[in-house]
Image (cartoon, rainbow, N blue to C red; front, side, top):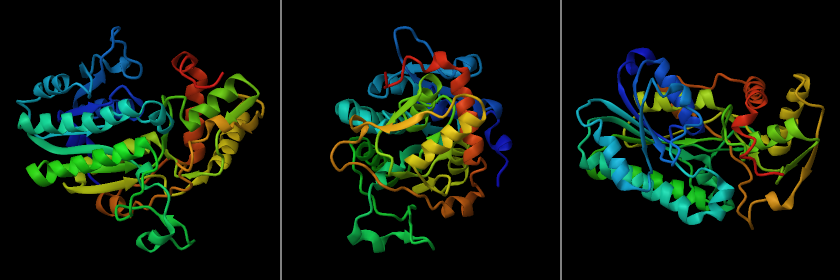
Length: 354
């Protein structure tokens, strides 16, 4: 495995979605490795940073919007005289449920935003070492029975989703991310841009928006006796954000241009089991008594759009880079609960429950 300190020290790195969940953890790691970090964050009237305010003196902040090609180009132009640049494209409307409520914004941000970034990179003729577009496991959707023999099957007869697996997006969010993946590869094929795509399997951890499943469970348990959730049957491969950040870094530094990589924990769990695990660990750590879990039909995905099971097979990434997850579910959940318990002001006004 390569030495990240040697590879990242003083290297120019441009990160979209830098003030978001995964992006902010990536920023912290890049600063620790002494990279020359450029953070692209969505402009607001207040200019307030939520997750990387503590790093604002250590990084170059570019305020703009992926949907605005001018602001994207201006930000990237700041790197015109630099060499061996890494670009991590993490900016997106990333919530599956909200993609049904805000479909136009989702497509605009995820598809057109990616196009604006790629086109500006080519137009400015930037010296890029790697351009990493973050995809999602949601692009795989449900396995169609007639396509099962096209998938990798594990020894326990479960489908392992890898770079070779067919895709079947079942939400506007998943479709928009798949389009972003293809655009990224189009620019590799047409212009030789050294791009990669990384499909992440359900990152969780501190700073995650509380509307995602892990934060929804924890924030409700911290404040009341009932935890209201949607469908508890789907299974997800839950990967701690710190491991996810390391995955991105190793793909960008060791991955082959023009290829796709997937990563995750390598095991999945039903949402019922995930909720039970979180509530048990929180009770053991004295954060709450055991709340009741109830299902709310209003929290289900519309129609037949739910994805029932996602499980990663990340052999390609492990073989090429040596990467594998280091954080157990128990460790990751404990660190996540502690963050929400200690930082109520960061999430209390952002929850989607009453």
